[in-house]
Structure formats: structure tokens, C-alpha cells
Amino acid sequence: MLYARNRTTGKGEWRRLTITRSILALVVLGLAIGLLALPLLTQASSDGALNVRRDRLESGYRLRERAPAASSNSMNAAPVAPMFASITVDRTDDVAAASACTAAANDCSLRGAVTFANSNVGTTIVVPAGTYQLAIAGGAPEGFSGNNAIGDLDIRGNNTTISGAGAATTIIQQTQPNDRVIEVNPFLDANFTTSISDVTISGGHETTGIGGGGIISG
Image 1 (tube, rainbow, N blue to C red):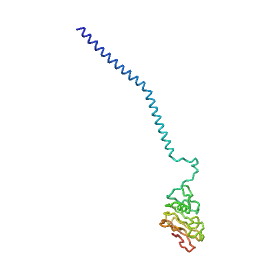
Image 2: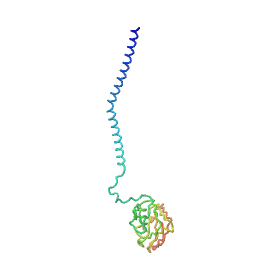
Image 3: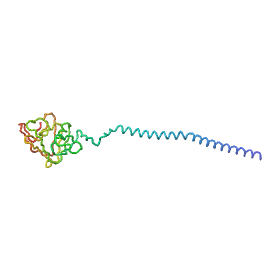
Image 4: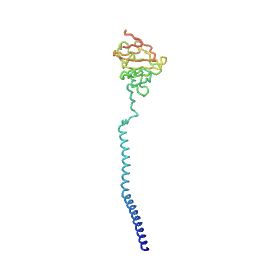
């Protein structure tokens, strides 16, 4: 009986040792695999970070590439006039060359605004309160010619709108003795539309026998 008990005890001890050794072997194997895989994981993480940074850089480059390049002399660049939009008269003197009509100051006289509208169909000319005196003589040589640089204001752009601040405060006044104030559609184009509102037209004369001292429309 004693022999059998000792024999049973030996088998149990052997089994425990075997299990312990197996567990230790698995632990050692796991540590070895972890140590071997660590450099690969580190490299993959580094590559991933590099890829993220590279993607961000490339994305930023693409965004910058799509954006229009800024001029090195942008501080001195002239503002760009709006196309087919609303422009605002910003001076009351009669200067034909002031026709840029941008966001810059003093580059849009009333005559200049009409010149701008003649080249840009559908322009609305906003005329703030003030008296806008036409002082460039045209007289008999102009007639019904459509020359906006002299004499009356010649509206040649279709769908031009002139909008004042009110008849009591926005006044378009002809100062020359032989010129009307406004001439609309001098070339008699079909389906021509013009709108003039909230202004007072004064001081015009017509001496060529055609008619329309204040305004004439073809």
C-alpha cells in the first residue's frame, strides 16, 4: 500500500512539473516573439507616421497648387472691376477717363460708369446723393452719335440700370448750352431696355432739331 501511494504521488508531481514547464515554455516563446516583432511594429508605426505627414504635406501642396498664385507686387496691383454687376459712382466731377469702377476710391465718375456699362451688358449704376454736372461739351458735332466721351451721357449697353438715392438728392445736370443730358440706345438696337429711377435730370438743351433736351431714347 505504501508503494502504491508513493507511486501515485510521483505521477502527480511529474504532471505538475510538466504543466509548469509547458507554461514557462509558452511564456518564453511569447516573449521571444514579442521581442522579434517589436522592431517591425516600430518601423510600421514610423512608416505610418511618415505616411500621414507625407499625405498632409501632399494635400497641402495640392491645395496651394490649386490656389491662384499671388502677385509679388500685389500691394500695387489695380483692383479688378466686377463683371455684369453693380457699380457705384464715387465722384461727382465729369471725368470720362474715370471708368475703371472698382472698389478703389475715385475711379468711377457718372460718365465713366456709363462707359463701363456700355461694355458690360446688364450693369446697374448706383448713383449716391449729390449733383453730377456734365461739363464736357459736345454740341452740334455730336448729334445723335453715341459718343459718351463728350456732351450727353450715351447709354449703349443693353439692360443698363441707373439708380439714384432719390429725386430730391441725386441730380444729373447738364451745364453745356448745346447738349441734352442723356441719350439712350443711339444705334437703335432692337429689344433694348434701360431703367432710370430716383434721379432728377436737369439743364439739358437740344439744338440739332432731333429733340429730347433732357433725355432721348432710340
